[in-house]
Amino acid sequence: MASNITNMASAAAGTVGEMEAQERRQNRLRLYFKGPLRIRRTAERETLILAMINALDMYTTVYWVATGDAVEANPLLAPTFESHPLTFVLTKSLFCLPALYMAPRLAQRHPRFTVWLLRAIIVAYIGIYLAAVR
Image 1 (tube, helix red, strand yellow):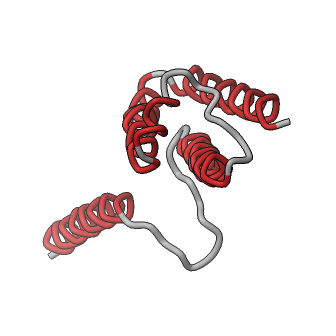
Image 2: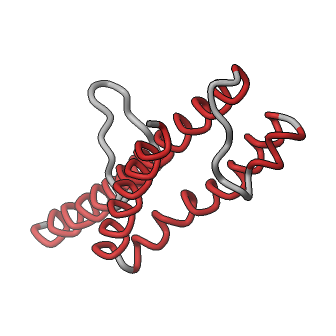
């Protein structure tokens, strides 16, 4: 009788453990918006900041060049803007999005290096942006 109870307890514990593991796997794939946005993986915060800076740069460039208040200073992107602003946006996105996609994957193998590198890129991007905008 005691061994039967022990077997039932261990079976229940195994089932509970499996259920908890399955719930943890499902929770990794969900985003919860019941409070502040919490970034769980390494380098996701830096990647999000870099994406927002890039989007702001793209928007302000299109706006200022379209109104005639500025010109595109990047010699690689200037010809794309001359053909059409949408071409500029697509080209800039084409060069930026793969790097933003790969950053969290690089962080899985080299987390400290990736975070340091992304932060250095953020500081350099803001510095170049502010120097060019003046």
